[in-house]
Length: 90
Image (cartoon, rainbow, N blue to C red; front, top):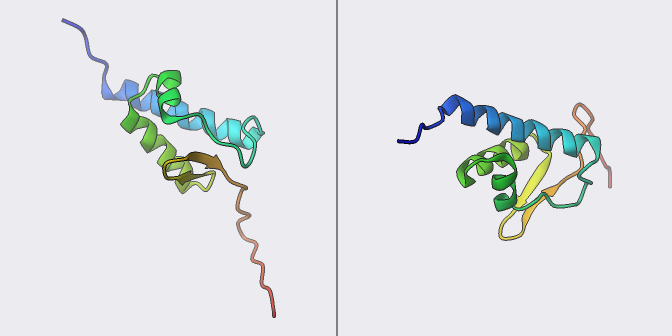
């Protein structure tokens, strides 16, 4: 009988994936406008299920680091400057 890993173990790997991708985006290792590796590549790289990878990518979308383009992939977007508002008058 094979021993199953606890949920805590998967949560740790999910957090590791999110933090690693966040760091790669902010440091410029993954350039703005480029695409992240495919979900299946991320599954293999971090040892997670497809559902877990999608949950992690949703966190990055919510943080404004990437945008999800259906049937294409996940693209890195420029950071949104908080606290700064631009008003244009016609």
